[in-house]
Length: 95
Image (cartoon, rainbow, N blue to C red; front, side, top):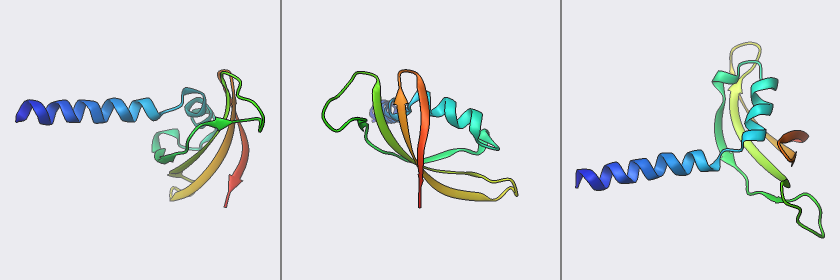
């Protein structure tokens, strides 16, 4: 039974890491006031940046997260990114 629980915990941690997006995480590390306070609430699905076709390595993704502001309080925000190759660009902040 212990082995099953450990296996499930390992799979859970691996699946959480799978959901991260390196380009967006680099953007957060460069842009946030306190990158260490970042808590991802929800990773949106990757979708095509263009309506008619899918190009490898080019997509858009929405991320809902919590992080500290300049006053030290936590705020919740939702941002939509465009990712091209290994670079993420903020498209809009969603209210």
